[in-house]
Amino acid sequence: MKSRAWVVFVILAFAAVSTISAAEAPVVRLTVLNSMERIGQDQEPYGPAEANIAAARNEWESFQVVVGTSGENIQVTGAEISDLTGPNGAKISKEQVTLYREEYVRVRKSTPRAELPPGLHADPLVPFVNPITGELIEPRRRVQERWGGPSKTLGHDMVGVPFEVFRGQNQPIWVDLHVPKDAPAGDYRGTFRVRIREKGALEIPVVLTVWNFTLPDRPTHGNHFGNFRNVARFFDVDPASDRFREIEMRYCRAMVEHRLNPPIPTYLLPEVNQDGSLAIAPERHEALKKYLAEMHVSEFEVPRAPFARLSVAATGTDYATIPPQEREKALRYYRGYFDYLKQNGWQEGAFVYLWDEPNLKENYEQVLVLGQLVHEASPELKCLVVEQTYPHDPSWPDIDPAVDIWCPLWAFIDRDTIEQKIAEGDQVWSYTALVQRAPSYHPQYEQVKGLDPPYWHIDRPLIVYRVPTWINRQYGITGLLYWTTVTTVLDPWNNPAFAHPGHYNGGGYLFYPGLPFGVDGPVASMRLKNLRDGMEDYEYFALLQAKSGDAAVKQFVDKVAPNWWDYCRDPQVLLDVRRQLAEKVEATE
Image 1 (spheres, rainbow, N blue to C red):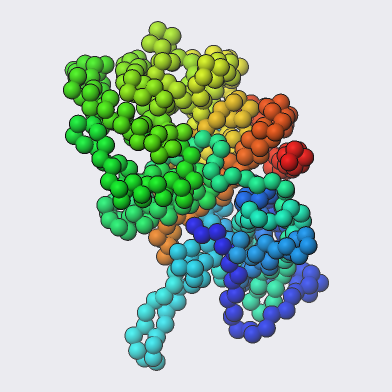
Image 2: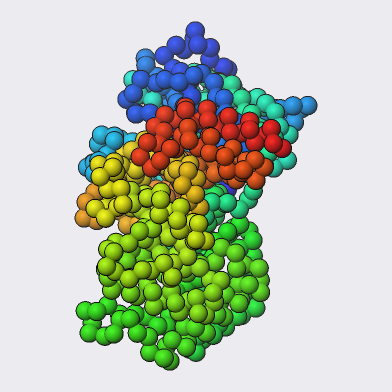
């Protein structure tokens, strides 16, 4: 989505607006929350009466403004933020800010081991402005061109503004602010204003500290979050249509805005000839080149060869042997693919997603066969296998020769074997899915069997989406994997639960479709915003490590994430440590 600041004025029945003082309207108040907090719809408003945030250049930072009323029902008709004025008259334009109304979705049945109860939870972020057209999303209404003539319906049921706040309730507004790369360091000040029908406006001060360092465009922390094929289902669109390609590209751009690697659309990848060689069409190549550059792609997933597929034992075939003709095609395919990437300087970060959760002895044997094939074709091409760094069963084959990137579940993490794999030259990523505790074959099972890592679901505190990059850094883990952001759920806006066969609220689901307000594209969640913030925190680690080494970083990481189970639960503690970390980075500049 476009990162622009939207100044929204919805004028209803008044021409001039005055500012309301606290004495004039004590029943309506604005309070500020940080990005990791979540307030209930009927909860007593809390928080300071000003926004005080900090960020590096080329970083996003967020806060929430809660509109609460205790004495009467009100209608909020608009909200805006001023330009932020900084040192020597420097300005950060209001166009660097995007405003959203937080929508509440219902958790009807709890996720296993949920930390929050069923009920309404703020999660989807409804934009004030259509990110495609740049126009205000208008509320639904019926109009007639002439009296007595036919009427037509315009607008949408779901909008950012206007919105009502009933007595005893509140409505949060999410504020997303991007700091430009050329912003001078220092403190910036501005005003956030909320307009209320027939009452005028309420204001709060906004203070932004810009730190004297800049984050890179490309994510340093490796990541892979699946593809967007399932999006076609939400929009009822043909996956082969131009409309789907437009929607898919909007989802890809939304990934980039949240510091995640977008999947590479298949129509941009080289075609494959029958003999396994690649067909490099100039127009397609240029489109791929442009995509990789504009999307700041840091990892390139090489699709598994469409040849040399291994069957399972149940088919009666030899699942560990590849026919010679098929094998030769697969070798040609992998060799040609890596050569193509290397010729264009795209080989760094290239990998084959070789196997997902090899949970049988036969799967281990298959991993060995396929990994040997890839490495024979191109020794530099890495193989990623979603498996822990210790064997499922000691009697099974050792798959180490086939694996370059290990990817254990969070609860399956074992520090000793991870450090061993890294010392041998492998990489380790991590991932989460469902609600899985340590397996009985974990080397430290007795110590960790009853412990829970920060599972990803709606009915958990938002900090669980931010802290995993800190924990990864604690273990030397350099990547994060999630199977998808757009899995099939029961009802995208009313019951966003993945049922498999249990009930996992928001599992594999970080985007909402924009259909309820006429947007052919994605709507971010508060959970996704916190994941983005965690990815940005990791950039602080990388900057400090480059200047001062691992030990300098570890002293901060230890305060927030000593391990996968004793991670920090207090958002303010994390923010305080982040500020100390930023000050240390600044001191090394």
